[in-house]
Image (cartoon, rainbow, N blue to C red; front, side, top):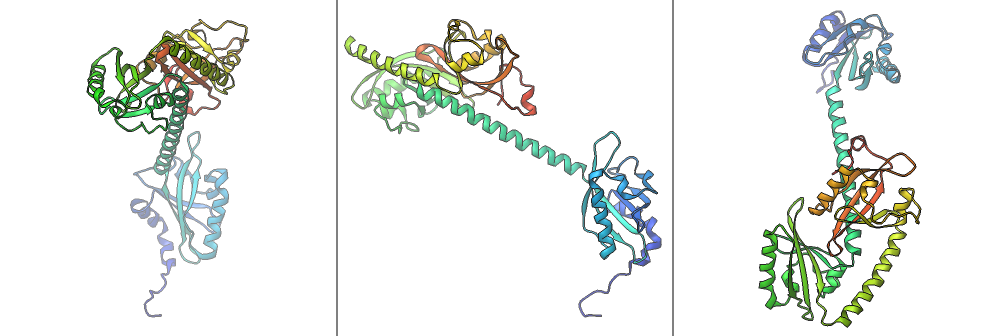
Length: 404
């Protein structure tokens, strides 16, 4: 005997004890144990009590092991038997037993031959609990990924509407009065065209003499249930600004929504500003007409004021057919419209909603809707996109329900 090594175990001594051995194995180490002959025919079966194996397992006696598993797994049974004929021991392999009309039962098997001429002992562990946990983990991961991309899409559409708006707009943290978000128009009006206003106190952009009055005004707006109007002076150039502030409850914190407008000294300046605004509006309308998404603008009651060509195409309407003045309920369910408009007016602009869109000559289709308030025009901008593929969770979404 080589020093440091144990002598090989003679497994042939266990051959006569095979029936008793499988009972011991299922009681301490596995969920099912099988005794097989050289050809793979099952000679004896023992099942555990904690997690019962297939209900018909005791009827396998006399059947070939390959006949008890699913068709796809029969090749693995052959690999098992080949391992045993070569070295007397097989590595762990996963098999699945057929279970009548029920789901397949996954098992992890290993096997060993009891001596050169003895039978084979195969022991298996029930993997149903592991499979259920893996399936739950996979479904959770898919849900997280789907929700992440839906939120990214909603944020992108919100950013599109927020940035292209002609009106200077700010979103301010109601607790600290730091600027959370600002569109280009607001940054330019406050003398910060580079956009470095975001993340800094709003008071840093107004004249020092006006800061105390500004913060007192914001305190009042935060406590009010109605929009408030006020005036302040910018730090850059001392321009007078009109403010209109509304308090909103967001997902994570309370915020203030501010609309800014410069106070013009004379009518001529106002006329020049109107001319510039008209040119910008026409440019944006041309941009919206060429947008791939469906874009619509409605008042706070849902009456349409503007739609682009993509909306008319989705509704199967011609350019000559009147749309202005009609309500969204002509295409979306009344309950869904009421809920969407209510949430948007309450400040839930960074959300993605699922709704059913009714077309003139075809079956209804499901769309995703994101929207934001345009306070200066007292209207709401909406962006819609077709739901070409939906997950099983989204198939049952009710019209108007947000899908975050």
